[in-house]
Image (cartoon, rainbow, N blue to C red; front, side, top):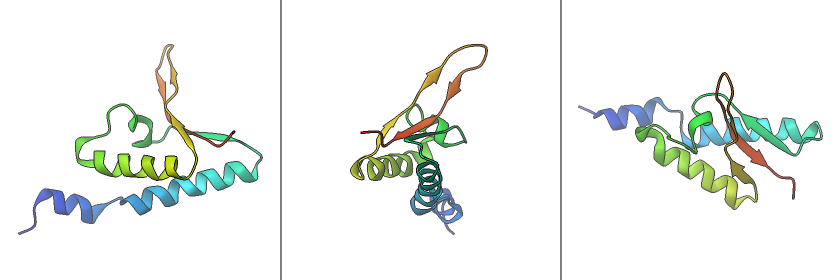
Length: 93
């Protein structure tokens, strides 16, 4: 019998799935002459605050890959009637 951790790993998304999704967002933005993106989709919106415990390792690993590739990674906070969180990836410098 497999355990829940193994089932989560099999179900994904994997580190590679996340990197592929993010890479496509970056390519599209760069082709449109942008120098940063903010991904507000779940689970990315909370990755720098409180990634779900079972996905923390994947989130940290993906962020490490982005930083190693020269991107700046941050999480903007826009407070108002609603809180706007996201994963900001910048290549402005």
